[in-house]
Image (cartoon, rainbow, N blue to C red; front, side, top):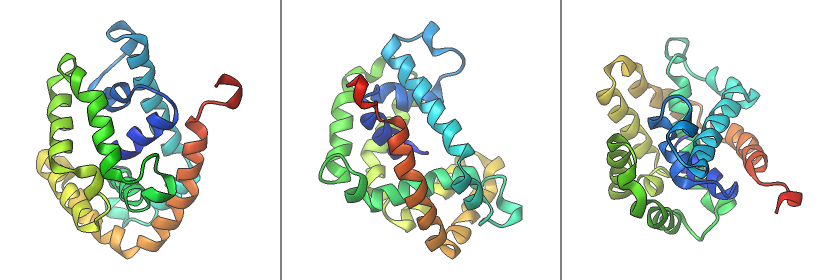
Length: 195
């Protein structure tokens, strides 16, 4: 899952938005560095990533990519899932539209962001300024994101070419999303007895 899905799932789980978005910028045991609510959010992010990688739908989706590109397919799929979540937000959304959700999450994170790693601050600022969460609904934007990731990490040069696989198998990927994402939503929601 990518940034929009992590924010959405964190909201469903009543988990820290900062913890769930800073996780990729934190190594090791977060409980030694961060308050429990933040560390719990980091651990939820990691749990979601592990769960996602083990889902049969994700394993099947990886096979839709050319053999030469399967090494980078998991990264491309993370972006694809955000694309479908943004596109079909009304089916899963917590607020009326992605723009409102983006603004609400920014209001919750921004006042505290200076306490976290600089790379995380830059990432979140770029996300807000570029309106990534809303723009993920556009497949052209997905292609732009994949090209941008290649520029920042040249070893992942094949990533920019995965847009071809995504376009070619778009309907199949969409079908996989509608199976896996509702299950992810259910998996993170607190049980009724804990409410």
